[in-house]
Structure formats: C-alpha cells, structure tokens
Length: 160
Image 1 (cartoon, rainbow, N blue to C red):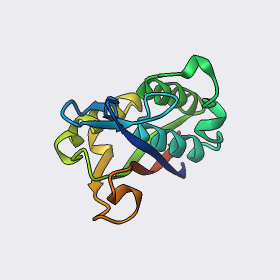
Image 2 (image 1 turned 45 degrees about the horizontal axis):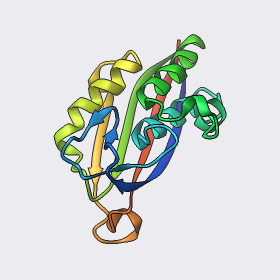
Image 3 (image 1 turned 45 degrees about the vertical axis):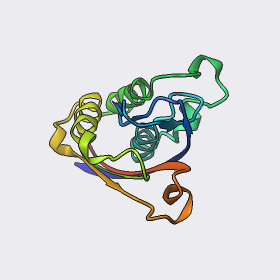
Image 4 (image 1 turned 135 degrees about the vertical axis):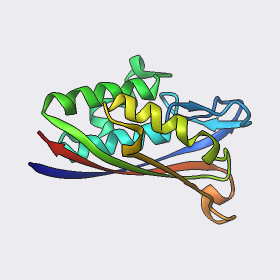
C-alpha cells in the first residue's frame, strides 16, 4: 500500500450578483459570489488541485485551462468528477480530505454537511472522509475585507 498526499489552494474575488457556490453547496442568501472562468467554486478547485497533485497528475490549470471557452461557466463539481475519474482510473482511493475556507461571508458551517456529501460523493468516499472548516480573516487581508474567498485542501490518497 502506498499513501500519497496532495495540497491545493485557490482564491476567487467576490462580486455582488454572482451565485455563491462553494464545495457544490449553493448559498442562496449570500449577496456576493466568486468570480471565475467556471462557476468560481474555490473549494472544488482546491480539492481538484490536491487530488491531482497527490496522484502526480499536475494541476487543475493543466487539465482545465482557464482560457478554454468550453469551460466558461462550468460546474466545478463536474470538473472535480472528471479529475477524480482519472485519479481513480490510476488505482487511487480517497483516505481523507481536509478543507479550510477563509472568508467573511458566506458563513460556512451551516452548509458544511452539504459540501462534505457532495465532495465525498464525487470521490466515492463516505462523508466522514471529508472535513470542512470555515474561518474568517478578522478584518485583515482580502478575505477579512470581504473581497475574496480562499480555500485550502489537503488530501491523502491510497494506491490500491
């Protein structure tokens, strides 16, 4: 058995009038949402980078270039599913994923269970294998000023 670890990091500017989607969960009551070529889901992007890195498959930009017109407005859960299919095809399974989301809004905790279920479902794991944490910038930096959302992910894969 071989274990492999990967790390992912993503940040998206927040703008009024954009849908707020993080980890596949929709935050209907949030007045701002992430801006990106796809749907801007920084959580899915960080997890995608982490699983690709752990499997030695490069990064999200290599698999899904942000200048590809076919990916404009893409569902980031679907992109994670495509990346995970390649990772699984190479014989890996998820041991666990740990994700931290840094933003002033939306409040992460009320939707953490939905994010766990969506991410675990895509990666063929139990929701217990995915941990979601939220924290605030406490008025410091772009997260603290409410300008952006940042997500960091660490995943552990097992090669079957």
